[in-house]
Image (tube, rainbow, N blue to C red; front, side, top):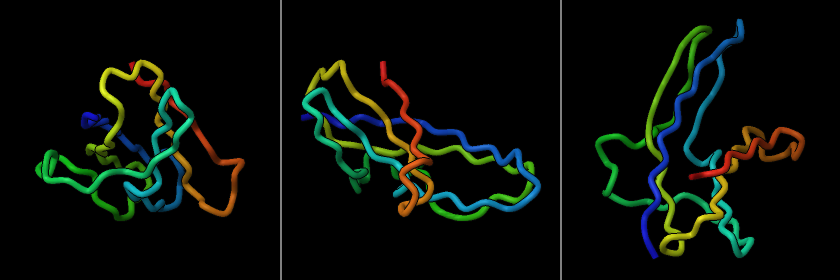
Length: 94
């Protein structure tokens, strides 16, 4: 296993404030396993916190996952609303 640290940049392009949270992110590996972020001190200085962004606001931070070493099929999954499966965005990790 190894730590996979992903840097995310969130920009609020709407006219309303939005919430953000590192728990909105999951990672899927090539075996189809979907896991939550890993709490670790590896990225303690850069870790994405939770909060709100005003209209036009921007925040950047890292989210860490523990995944099989050298897995080339990783996918970052963002789901802003746990109750709405239609709001899922997937990013291939290279």
